[in-house]
Length: 275
Image 1 (tube, rainbow, N blue to C red):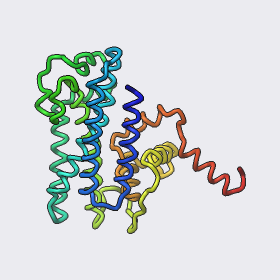
Image 2: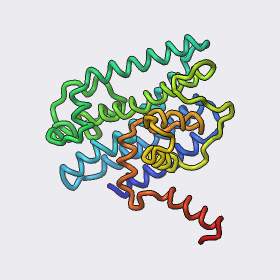
Image 3: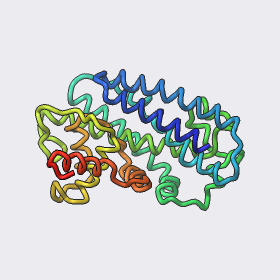
Image 4: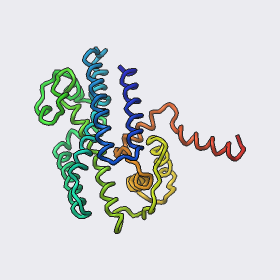
């Protein structure tokens, strides 16, 4: 299972990176990403329906981590597409529109605080009820995509996890867009944005590695990480994962912890003739 899902994730990451770095509009990007991710979810479903989990632990890992991470991106891009398609004109109307959507996310989360606390605290004592197939359920099908109706490809809470992760990304996107609206006046962020933005050409992970290193060294002073994160996204014209704790966790588990920083050090040393 791990070989297939890892290969699928790498393919998805590469295609998302290519889409996000294009000069197309956000409507075009989100539509293209949604179509690609929908196909990837279908591939994942076909594989799982023919796969036998070796034990409950592997099944829980799939439905608690692997599937939600992929589905959350599909939910995110579909939502972004719908947001941009219905976006009104005028700065004030857009700000109100985006803020209403953000309020809706907060209302959704507030109704599920117990589960969100359970998931974010990495608790596991209810995992057999939440993330194994064939368990009695009260509300799963009240909030699902059509592929969620297959009991062989869904559990009580894998969609909830995907929705929570998608909401994290959506919240960051909405706040970023509202800050862009404020660029004409006083920014909601304490930074002054440059008149001309430069598009980041490296990978998102490389930029995230940089941001966390800057924050750790207090390179920009006593600036909150979330504010620095939003600012860098704005300046470098890129949309990053808004779940900072998850981003840091992903960086921690890599075999080489700081490959991009190591690369920068090497190229600079070569330029200085020191290597």
